[in-house]
Length: 208
Image (cartoon, rainbow, N blue to C red; front, top):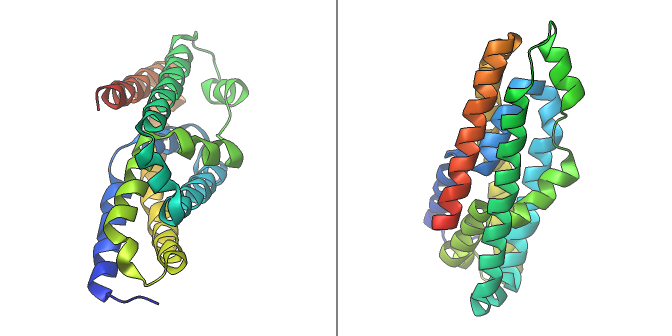
């Protein structure tokens, strides 16, 4: 049971701001929306929601304390997340270096695929921004209820409602860029631009 309605409103605001701002998840779903469209990106969105929900629930119920007592674990997760994003940036750059074909959209479908549900869910556990959000939300809003279990349920519920809606904005932004990927030159420019953004995020993670 919620004990502080103002704290709930603050939590909703926190969830919106952290979920709508650029980060690994939003960049990836934007690229997926551009390459594969809305429907094929839905499993990716669902995986993000599920993976982050289990993470934030675990943090509120005690995992956050374990991590705070073992700062080296957070460092390992940070480097793992940066390595994953560097690999993704390289894959995007390689797609831009492929020679043009008469049917680039079909070629993209054969050379790549949307991220699957379980892959998106597992990525949250090496996503530094997701860990920052989960630990920050737990530290600031775990007092939303009198018991840890109810607090975890409230935080999970808010992020399940707010997160996918915010991520979907980026999918739609990617879809609006889809026309740019219909030609070989446009596809290359888009792939290089996305690779640069993802690589930049990886560097920011290492410097954080």
